[in-house]
Amino acid sequence: MTLPTPLDDLLKLAAKTGERLAPLAADTDAGHDNGHESYRVLRESGLLALLAPREAGGAGLGFGDYWRVLAELGVHHGAAALGFNMHHVVIGALADAAGTRLPPAAEAFRAWMLDEVVNGRKLFASATSETGRGAKLRGMQTRYRLSDDGSHYLLSGRKSMVSLAGAADYYVVAAAPEGGGEDTGEASHFVVAADDPGVSFGTVPQLSAMYGTSTAPMTLDEVPVPRSRLYLGVEGMSLFKVVREPHWMIAGYTGAYLGIAEALFQHTVDHVTASPARADSPVVQQELGRMSARLRAARALVHEAGDLVTAQRGSLEANAMVHAAKYVVGEVGPQLAQDALRLCGSAAISRSHPLERLIREAQFAHVMPAKPQECLEYLGKAAVGVNLYDARAFAW
Image (cartoon, rainbow, N blue to C red; front, top):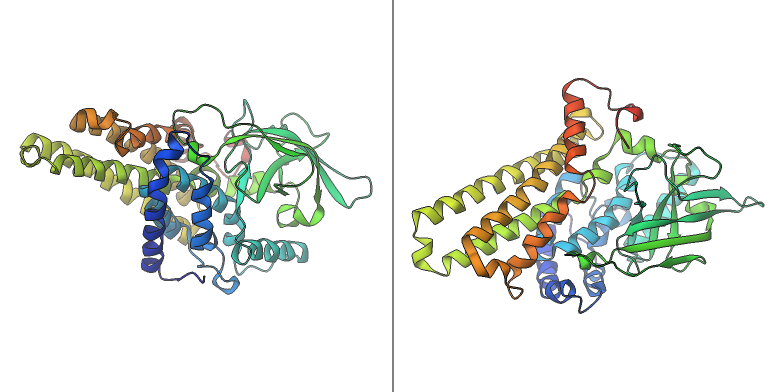
């Protein structure tokens, strides 16, 4: 199918797709399935090509509008929306470079990857996090080297938390050059196919929520990667990209957590209004008013931050705004969860009610990078005038 390009039509498609995803959330959360059916639904929807340029057959969506679509999916199935975002994290740099002339190797890479997404409906994922380091690129232990004949790279290492494990077709793996120092910042990204020799996945660990992200460890044992699958054909530029334009790495999934917060509020309202006596209570109305104010403030910040990235990608103000949005959404979700517990009582702790799952899922915003203290540190450094384009200014 060809994606529509007007935002209203894309939001309608996301809502329709979300309605198909919603019934899958409970069984996946309970561990009755691996969650891969959600990604089949997303493939069928055509939404994997949201960011692909229009001339390549995609919707050509900007960052701010992408967050709006992601939030709509997050309302229906938060974990699937997070997994869906991991696909777009690695498509984002290609989308950011739309319309920009690139060197021949980068042009060929971009054309191949966009064709895989748009025409092949291939699902991509990011493989960055490592034990003890999280998603930070500096000090990466996964290493790469060029083969003796120079025809391909060889990657070895272990990634601790890879979303879409076993569900994606390709994984964009961050690695540092073999022989580099412990604190090397010369990270590069490589596209590794799920069926490449030497690729294997562990089991999904025991979690309190988010099984639908299909997150598991990934091992790379001398995985051969053709030179054509070096991301954009350039080595050593990954840290530079993240420092200058951190929006995808540190805040791409913010829209998904906004969607979870939206769902928390709506399910709370639905529960309260089912009892007219409760709905007419001024005390209950004030509690709902507090929830509404918090949610509206978070939504407004997310929309403003996303639109600023679209308009001024890489500016210090846009970079600060996405950190602020990530922090605020990470705070508001758990606050709404506590409000829901207070207003809904046993319904909020019953496994048969969506609220119980949403309350658990809202807490995971604090786990995903950038973590709350990292967001605050970035904002504080920006306030006092630290040069945040200097990779040494922050623990990237």
